[in-house]
Structure formats: structure tokens, C-alpha cells
Amino acid sequence: MLEKVDEFDMEKIIEDFEAMTKDAERVQRKTLKKILEENGSVEYLQGFGLNGRTDPESFKACVPLVTHQDVGPYIQRIADGDSSPILTGKPIPTFSLSSGTTQGRPKSVPFNDELMETTMQIFQTSFAFRNREYPIANGKALQFIYGSKHLKTRGGLATGTATTNVYRNQGFKNTMKSVQSQCCSPDEVIFGPDFQQSLYCHLLCGLIFNDEVQLISSTFAHSIVLAFGTFELLWEELCANIRDGVLSDRITVPSIRSAVSKLLTPNPELADLIHGKCSGLSNWYGLIPALFPNAKYIYGIMTGSMEPYLKKLRHYAGQLPLVSADYGASEGWIGANVNPTLPAELTTFAVLPNIGYFEFIPMKNNRGEQPVGLTEVKVGEEYEVVLTNVAGLYRYRLGDIVKVVGFYNSTPELKFVCRSNLLLTINIDKNTEKDLQLSVEEAAKILAAEKLEVVDFSSHVDLSTDPGHYVIFLELNGEPSHEVLRECCNCLDKSFIDPGYMSSRKVNTIGPLELRILRKGTFQEILNYYIAQGAVVNQFKTPRCVGPNNSKVLQLLCGNVVRSFFSTAYN
Ligand code: AMP
Image 1 (cartoon, protein in one colour):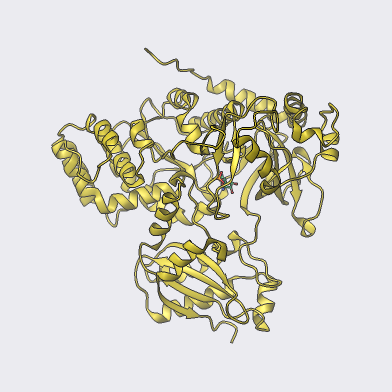
Image 2 (tube, helix red, strand yellow; image 1 turned 60 degrees about the vertical axis):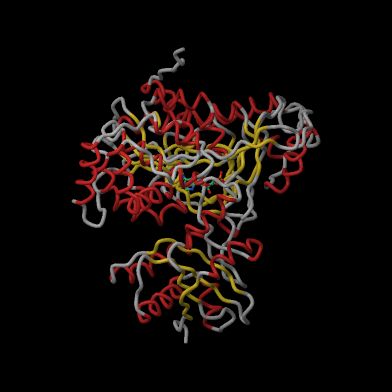
């Protein structure tokens, strides 16, 4: 039977987006009204005295701002099988697990059909804008996507990572077909139980259809860099599989073996072609367009904690455009990238005023201020995002900091800044993930002069010394001299320019920064550890600061240190 594929009219999508963003304030009111009409009588909201009111003023006056911790017990009751209307009028069918890589523990949040619809809406919106600039012909997408196991909660409800809930959904598959981006790999590969085997087969399926591949994508850019790093190691084996039409023994999962074997026939010409292309590359520069000559662009989230991987991605991409994907979370989507030609570092997200009700807590004046509405934000200011969604979260602090960089009609265009929780703090110092990233970028310049790269990095606050000090872990792709590493260590220390840190360093209430160099492959071990815990690669974000509550990862880091240095920058 033929599946029904909804063709969608891209001009219409853009027209709707234009109309909606011209009228963002009214659309926000309407969205809140709809959410509260459907859910106003749920147990959670009952206690706040809304009494049927659905306007933003009453909503803000009655309903408190909350974090995941506050709503966790309500979510837990639903997961445990309480089917009364606790957070939503209609029963919650599914739960999403966030990556948990920033906090060390995945968070469970409700997922329903309405949230799925908003997902498709944002995919279609950004696709319509993207396709205007980089039209793709009918073909395939090499998507490095991985589903997690679908588990059941104690109450028998389905739970999986947010991306898995999306990939399993028929609506997602139909949307991908209608945007001509069908995945090269069969479902058995996407949902396979062994991530390394799935990765290998994604590469193989991409190569089998190499002429048809129109785009290369993943949720977060990290997965693409990881995939082509793996290709560097295994390309000859992949060529041999294509030449002989026989899948390697390393693929042991029967469902993956049988699905991929069906696609493989001996193809010595293709094997020779790939072999020739790879042999002709210098240090793998331009690998992606060399393998996929008809690819139009590379697509995935490249902002925030993904920025450190851009250099490597650009190296593999050569002249092929990189297009950064939209902004959202397991809790819901926020904004679409409607300026796809901007370099990844400058990507902005135009908020879709009908996919949730949004508020913004000003970060100016050291927090503590009341949130403002979507259309009340000011250009140049930073805010924490507060979300009310269609799946039972009300005035929920997402924990992300964004900067308003302009307006698209009357809806703000946001730049992602960082997670709001401070990473590094000992006393009066305050350093975020962004500050750490900038500091590592400075040190990377010294390494670049030696033709070396930072593979990945993390940090830790060591309070076992008196005074406490920052520890920065770096994994490098080569072995610099002691002198170079000493210079990097001092550079890292000096590059934290937060006044609290600098003054504490000067009077030694924070001790000298310590640089610890890790054995090659340490971050791969950390990824494997998270995957063994049930995380999926799609949503993986390297933990940029590891505290004592994440003791296993801290052990992995500390156990892999090969050299360490203390800064003399403030001596
Ligand atoms: P998860 O917790 O796995 O659902 O991941 C959601 C988080 O990923 C968000 O709260 C952000 O911190 C981050 N994120 C999602 N989209 C983007 C983006 N486009 N740019 C930067 N960070 C993002």
C-alpha cells in the first residue's frame, strides 16, 4: 500500500510565517488562550486560581515560574500510571528524555501529538526558507540519526529520547518524504541496539547511494564530525564491503545485517571511485563533497555547545555550505533558522509565536527581574527562556540564555548564548559554558600555530586544594612540547576575564588554573559511557563541566590524564 505523503506548499508556509510574525503579540495571546482552554481545569493549574481566565496578565499573576524539579513529582505521577488530568486535559501518551548531558541526569518531560505537530511545523518552516536558498532535487539524505530503546514507564507509558519519539512518528517520515529528504538507511540501522554498528551502516548506506545524496545531516553537528572521524579509520573496510557486496563481520546485529545486506551488491566501480577520491584528498579536506558530489549542504545544530566542532566540520565540508538547524529542546521548539545563508556562528532563531507561549527573564541587573513577553524583549539584551507548551508545562524555565539580536517582523530573532547554570564558580567568580569555550579557543590558537587541534574539552572545579582552582581537560590530536602546553595553560588562566575570577586570582583566593592533557580517545570513552547509560548520540552534548555528582565521568577524565600543568600567569 502506498503511504500517504502530504505535499506541502513552501510558498504558503512562508506566507503563513510572515503573517504570523507580523502579528506576534496577538498570536501569542491566542496560543495561550488555546492552551488554557484545553487544560485550564487540570489539577496542577486548579490550585492557582485562574478561574477560567486565559489572558497573559492573569496567567502571569497566578501561575508561578517553575523548574523541572518543581514539576518533576507531577510528571512522575503520570508516568507511574495516574491517568487523571494532572498536567493536561487529554492523557499524556509518551515521555521524552532529555540528553541529560548538561546536568548529568536525563529529565523526563511529557510528549504528545500536539508537540509532534509543532515539531513538523518548525521543520517545514525552516525547510521552506532553506530550500529557497539551496534547493534540493529529489534524492536522499544521509542522516546520522539514532533511536534509543523505547521503554515503558512504571505506569506502562512509552518513554524514549525526544528525537526517538520524532523519528518513530509516521508524521516525521511523511514530512521527510515531502521535503525530499528520505534517510538513506533503513529503520533497522536508525533504531539498532548498537550505536557503533549503526554508525558504520549509515556511512555504508550513504556510500551505496552516494550519487543520490542531497544533504548530510544530524540533530547536533557533533554526530557528523564523529561519523567522518570514524570514516577516516574505516574507509578501506567500507570500500571492501562495496567491492565484494558483503557486509563486514563487525555487523553482528541480525536485523541490521539483513536490512543492509539487501542494499549491498558487488560494485567494484563504486569502490574504486571512492578509493580514488579518498586517496586524492589532502588530510581529508573536502571529504564530504568528494564522497557525495550532489550534496547541496550540511545540516544540523551548529550553535552553542556545538561551536567547538565547526572547525573540523568545515574541514570535512570544504566548499559545501553548512546550515545550522533550529532551536528547541525536549520540552518544545522555540525558533527556526530563517536566514540559512548566515555563517553558523551568526545563526539566529526567529520565534514561532504559535508553537508555545514564551516569556523572557532579563539577565540584566543580576537577574531577579520579572519576565517580559515575546514582543517586549529588547535588542541587545540577554534573557532566560520561559516556556508554556502544548504538553503540560506552564511557565517552565528552560535554563537557556539567549540574546535578542533583532526582530523578524514583530517576533524576536534570538541567538543562543549558553545554558544558564554557571559552570565554573568558586567564590565571586562566574564563568559560563561560553566563557569556557572562549578561553579554550584562545589556547587553541597557540596549538594551531603548531598545527595541532583540540579534539574536545571539559572542566572541573577542584575544591580539594586550598584555595580551590579550575581544572581544564583537553584532548589533542597530537603531542605538543611542554613549553607549548605551559603557554596554553597560562593562556587559559588569563582568558577567563570575568572580574570576579581575575581579582580572586590576583589575591590567590582562587589557585592557579590546572591544565590536564587527556589520552587520545577519552571523549569517545565518555560518549560510550553515556550510550551505555541509555543516552543517544543525537542529543549528546559533551559535559563541559563535571562535578562530583557525575563521579563516573570525573573518574574517566582523571584516569586518562597523561600530563598536567599549573598556570604561572598570575605569579
Ligand atoms: P535536550 O535537553 O537533549 O532536549 O537538549 C535541549 C538543549 O539543547 C536546549 O535546552 C539547548 O540548551 C540546546 N540546544 C537545542 N537547540 C540548540 C541550538 N539550535 N543551538 C544551541 N543549543 C541548542
